[in-house]
Amino acid sequence: MSKFSALLTAIAAVGLLVIPAGAEAQEKEGMAAADAAYMAAAAPGPQHAAMAAIAGSYRADVKTWMDPTADPIVSTGKTEFKMILGGRYLVQHYAGSMMGQEFEGMGITAYDNLDKQYVSTWVDNMGTGIMVTKGNYDESGKILTTVGEVIDPATGVPLTVKSVSTTISEDVHRFEMYMVVGGQEVKTLEATYTRTM
Image 1 (cartoon, rainbow, N blue to C red):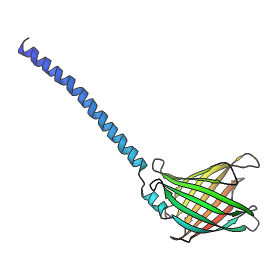
Image 2 (cartoon, rainbow, N blue to C red; image 1 turned 120 degrees about the vertical axis):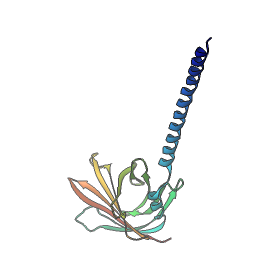
Image 3 (cartoon, one colour; image 1 turned 90 degrees about the horizontal axis):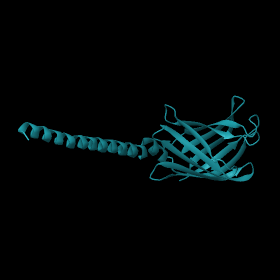
Image 4 (tube, rainbow, N blue to C red; image 1 turned 90 degrees about the vertical axis):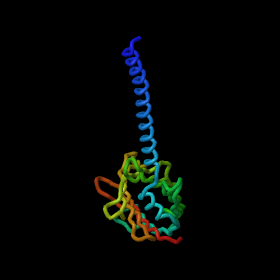
């Protein structure tokens, strides 16, 4: 074998080694980028810190409307907010009365880093479904509006629901629920939460 042939063989061998090494490096970079994306998606951020500020025990003063033209039904209850799973989700437990009956409910609020919006769920002892609403805060950072759907038990038809959560102060929050009936927003519930602990 001539020196020239030996040199070409050596160059080819080195090239074969470099190509897989380059591909392996690219693969490692891709995996590192994917890992970083997963970590960022899972990391609590400023939105989660804001939810954590709500944590505590509250007295609830509640008004409910069965007929929007009539006076509301007034009741009181207790609610507790706490963060779970490393500060990623805000859980609410509520106990009180509704229309003369014992009422208990639970909600979970999340800020989805990927979807860039808040997701709220609600379940209670007056139903068997899970209400899901999604939305964001206004520019003031004090009013969170979320929208979703529920099934009307009387008709079986989906109804649009809207919830509005307003930060009045560090210790007082107001929650309002609306249903869209015939294209009109009808207020069905208002709860004012005042911190007790």
